Length: 333
Image: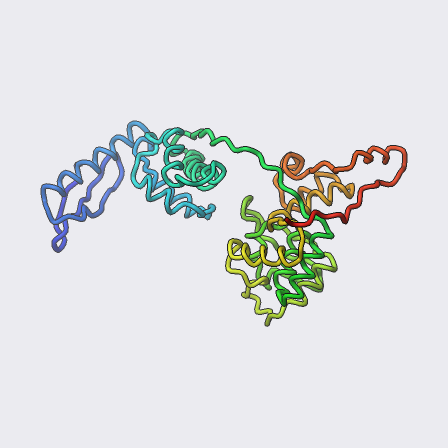
C-alpha cells in the first residue's frame, strides 16, 4: 500500500509497506504538502530499488556510513563525504572523482590528491560494490613524478641520535633509532604506546596504517637501550615518543639535523634506510618486506632498493672486499 503520513506533534512522519518492505521515518517538516511530496519520493525510490536493484538509489553518504561501520580507514573521509553528500553513486564517475580531488586540494601535489582524494573515494564505492550494492569504479590517478629519496645510513642515525641526546631530546633519539631499526613509518612510530612495547622480550607491536594490519617488530639492542633511556612513567596508555602525531616531529627533527651538521633527511628516510641497509647487507627482499611491513616484494624493490654508489662493487664476484666507505655521509649545506 502507498505510504501514509501522520502528524506527531508538529512534524509529519511517513509509514507503510512498499514492494514488501516496511518503511517509516520523518519528513522533518511541518508543511503537509511538502511532507506528501517527500513520502512520494521515498516510495518512488523504494520501487526503483526493488525493480532495478539497490545501486540505483544508493547514495554516497549511505556507502560511506557502511564503510565506516566496517572499521575501514577513516582518514580524509570528512571532506569527501561533505562534497558528495547524498549524490547517487551511479552518477559518480571516475572523472568526477578527479575533479573532486582538484577542488578539495587545489594547491596540493598530485600525490596528495591521489592519496587524500581519489583513493578514499574509490575505496568507499568499491566497498559498496563488495556488498553487491553497486558496480565497482576505476579512477585514473594523477601522474606523479617519482622522486629519488636518499636513505639514512647507520652512521647518519648514530650522529642524529647523539645530537638529540646532547639536546636532552632522548625521545627523539629513540624515535630515529626505532624507525631505522624496525622500518616503522613516522605515524606508526608516533602512535606507539608503552603497552605495545616489551623491552625484556625486545619486541614492539606496530599498527600498520597503510595495510590495516599489525606486525611484531624485533628491537635490536641499540633500540632497546634508547627506549629505556626515555624519561617517562611508562604508563601503558602513554605514547612512547611523546608526539601527538607524525606531523609534530618535523621542525624539531630539522633543528637536530642542522645542529648535528649532517645531510638533511626526513624521518621517512629512516624507513628507506631500513630497507636499503638490509638489502645491501644481503638479506633477501622477501624477508625485508615482511620485517618492514610492506605488502609485497615488488614495492621494496621498486622504491627502496638503492644502487650502491661504488663502481668497484663488482669486485665481490672475485671475493674482494668492497671499497665503499659505508659510514661516509654528505654534510648539509
